[in-house]
Each structure stands twice: as C-alpha cells, then as structure tokens.
Image (cartoon, rainbow, N blue to C red; front, side, top):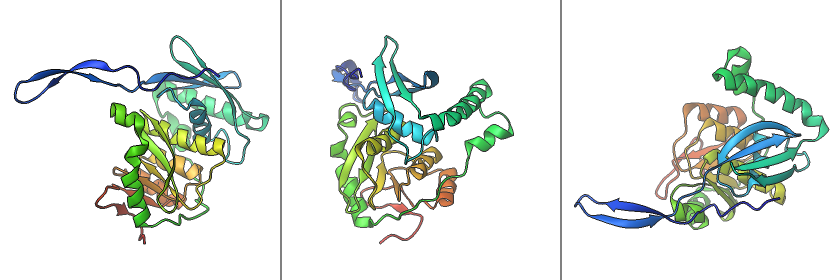
Length: 266
C-alpha cells in the first residue's frame, strides 16, 4: 500500500481584505481534495473526490453503504496506489458478493447516462432500510459533552476550515474515534470503515457528524446499525422520513446551547 500524502499541503498565499480598505498578505493551509478511483475485482466502480487519508477505511465504509458487503462479512482486502492523476483503491469482494457488484454496476451505468432514469432506478434510489437493532444508552448531557469536545479532534478542519468530521461517541459522551474529510459522506464512510477494521462497535453510543442531516447519511447510519445519529445542522424532510422507516433516532441542529430531538431524550 502506498502511503497517502499529508492531507494538509503547504500554506498558500492570499490577501486579507477588510472593510476599512486594508490589504494584508496571509498564508492559509488548504485541504487536499483528490480523485480516488475504487475498483472491485478488477472492475472500475466509482471515483470519489476525497481527502487522501484513511482510504482503506473509506473503501470499507463505502462498500457497506453501497450494499456490496454486509456488516458480518470479512474485511475487504484493499490495496491503495498513487498515480499522477490521483489514487486507485483496489478491493476484492468475496465470491458470494460478486452478483451484487454486477447488479450495482448495471444500475450505475444507467445513472451515468441521465441521472435517475426509469422506475427501476427510482426504486433502487430509495431501497428499504434495515431496522436499528439496539438502542443508544446516551442522554442529553452526554451529547452536549461530545459537542464541546469535538473541535479538538478535528486537526484537519482546524488547519483548513474545510473538513467535515464524523465521530464515534461513547454513551457517556466520550469521543472514541474521529475521521475527517472534505466530504461529509466520505467522513462517515471512513468512520464506519475504521470501526469495522478496528473491531469497534457502537456499544450504546452514537454518531456525531459536523454536517447537515441528509438522507444519504441516514441510510449509511441505518446500514451500519447506528443506534443514534446526531448532526450539527438541520435535516431534510426525506432524511427524517427515512430515519423513521429504519427506527433511527435523530438529534439535529445540535449546538452548545440547544438541540432538536424527534423523540424525548433524558
């Protein structure tokens, strides 16, 4: 495996302009965003624009979100290589999952032509979600503790101001693991993949995301059997509906002074 570069490159020069007319030269670190091509069993599947760090975690979590693997499958064997244009991650699916790959490739081919084309593809876009099997044991005090502590676990965002975080939080509010990426979906895929590769479970805790609550993030949470999803910003209506279908509790607009819950919380 090739080691990815530092996700924060050398500072770049800018001019800081203020309302009083002053102009000051400043340096600003910028987050890297590079194409990551994912291949399964020798076939190209997707190209993601992602921060070039924790790529094997990204592939593991992305594969679960794409339903190419299940939570109880063995971990993917993933090789990551650098090219002049970006990164290539080559993963091998087990033989009993190859049919899923072929089916998904067929639908993705339709998607690339004209978006969501036809009834079959629309049905694929909103497939049934599994029900959450175990509740979170957390409370509001723990969520506020996690919100207060998250920033110190975001070195990439501290350096660049351009990265999302996804955190695995214990039931008592302690932050156990964090992954960052320029994309909110990538950050959550990386967290879920890192949990799988590290043998970590939710253990009555929850996921904390520094983003809005989109339906895609709800689906990733449901497929990972996450007992509670907490996001910094607001949800979409579809995200709320999909969470209800999966029995996934949501906490949204989670800020230091208040949060919104869809159901009572201690």
